[in-house]
Image 1 (cartoon, rainbow over the protein chains, first blue to last red):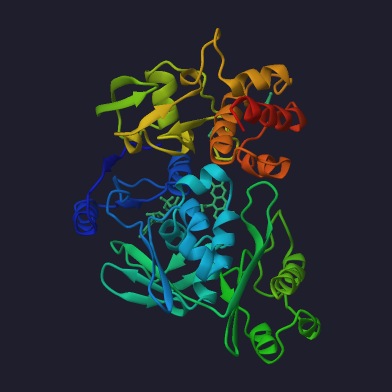
Image 2 (image 1 turned 135 degrees about the horizontal axis):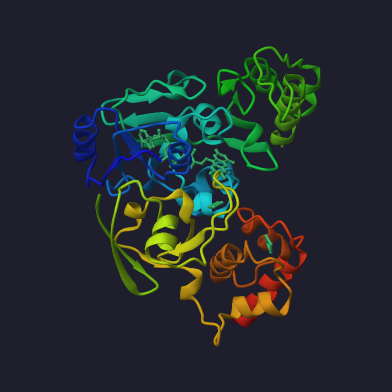
Length: 261
Length: 155
Ligand SMILES: Cc1cc2nc3c(=O)[nH]c(=O)nc-3n(C[C@H](O)[C@H](O)[C@H](O)COP(=O)(O)OP(=O)(O)OC[C@H]3O[C@@H](n4cnc5c(N)ncnc54)[C@H](O)[C@@H]3O)c2cc1C
Ligand code: FES
Ligand code: FES
């Protein structure tokens, strides 16, 4: 790892001052993505601003939404009574991330800011019409994810919390990569009355995306059978050593069917 | 360079190291506790698992600086050769290891698992050890060891 400077501020505003005092500083949350990246010398920030002391880890029921602090560890979301009651699918998603040690450290904010094309959380943010609250604004999920590892965040913008809209019903099913546990394909299906949102992760070359055709089919008939007629095209899907685009296309349909119960 | 002071197994370890020092390197190189192992560079193998305030973490994926102010427990901190921790005893009695490389991490993960879930089923144990890779035993005896360890720990 290249040499770097470690800073641990006690509030979001101090964290912003710290990041602005650096040339190419990086926020450090759970470190489960950033530290491996630094170890492999794929990044060379002149400073790391640890945001674990900034009081960003509360989880609250706000009526129509559940608001989760960016520093909430995956294990806290998985075990939260509030999340389990209002959006059990979200607790299930968190419980399925990586392994126990990854969940003990990794955070919601880190996962969403990183926008790994195989990460689980981005699909929940998109399907549950979430709002990403930063130090300066609120960004709607549909505007937040702008491409693989790309988001609408500015360099010095910090995610403080994310509000997830409570669905009538929701489910997340993933086909985990057997080695890493990341999603080879993961599908988050959320129903809000007559409206259905289907967000697919692990598959798109541009990162997480909504599948409009499945959304409209499921809106008129919420059943796994109704998906049989849908043709999932493999254009724009990832092909790598783990799976071809055609295989992923098939998994998208299969995971969605399993999610519709 | 700066001074980093960590509480490891109840003892204060103060060393002049760079901010980029990994916790696992601080434990092995500076504190001289080589029971915590390094088996990969992708945060997947779990040979480096230690406890921070009772929570299992991969010491290879954390900076020493991030652990300041916490209580760190390594495999050396849970028992001695004369008085093994019940989980270590269970691994010994059930042939839960062959080469032993993964064992410190397995034991540390298993202790957290059992402390959270005294009646862990075989599935709970297998899920709980997802982050620990063993290249020798075939896992069967590891699962058996954790079950036996849970009983010894009062499950
Ligand atoms: C072995 C392994 C298995 C994994 N399996 C899965 C899996 O199955 N599914 C899955 O979804 N993920 C998986 N992950 C990734 C894991 O969920 C990470 O925790 C997550 O992607 C990053 O979160 P973090 O808190 O560790 O962020 P960090 O690594 O600390 O940061 C990641 C990036 O986000 C930025 N950042 C962090 N917090 C904020 C914030 N609040 N505001 C703005 N920017 C911020 C950082 O600057 C950095 O660029 C796995 C990781 C490992 C090591
Ligand atoms: S050394 Fe492999 S996970 Fe830490
Ligand atoms: S006993 Fe050899 S790696 Fe597990």
